Figure 1 (cartoon, rainbow, N blue to C red):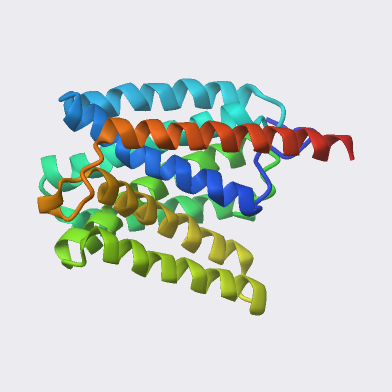
Figure 2 (figure 1 turned 45 degrees about the vertical axis):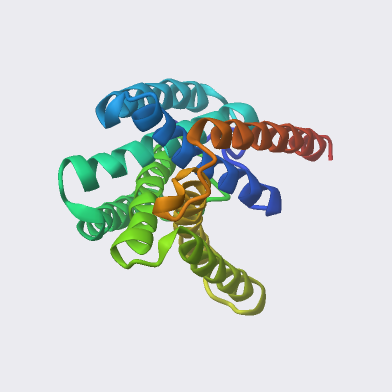
Length: 250
């Protein structure tokens, strides 16, 4: 397809990261709610949310530009599906968090390489073509899955626990932000590092809220935590929609 009239994705501003963290945390708590609390299992949860992701993605790809509501619904579906896929790879298939993370990292690098070869860029703030956006969403789905596996590896395999892991990942995100503002390191590279890291942050933070006290969590439950982050996500999307309308009038 030829280039569209405008950009197809959001600007990477502070509100983007607020929504992204809320969506990724909801991805963790939501996937656990369906697969564990509602006892649907990983396969059924993956099927449901991959179907949601593909339907929403078809709607998003059919749009001429960026629409906050459809974009973030698609992203949230990818986050929930990514969590369930990660758990299926690591637990049901028995690959473990380390090997699962390595597999997903290789897949992400391959997709980014193919994206760059086809489009001559992997700039996430300028995605003007349909083919570039397809690569964009495939990379996002894999990165969301990778982030979940990496967060579980840090919290469980390395024994840091949910709270310590969230603090460590927060430190990494702050470091990336400092690199962004005070160095000339590629913004695209820093984006992908931050994108992957915000996923295990959401995963470990979600687990911290929902897991039992015996497992190092606060035992707030998946339903309550998912409801809370759904409300945060809705509020943030409303603000993003207002900001996008103001940008279009300038």
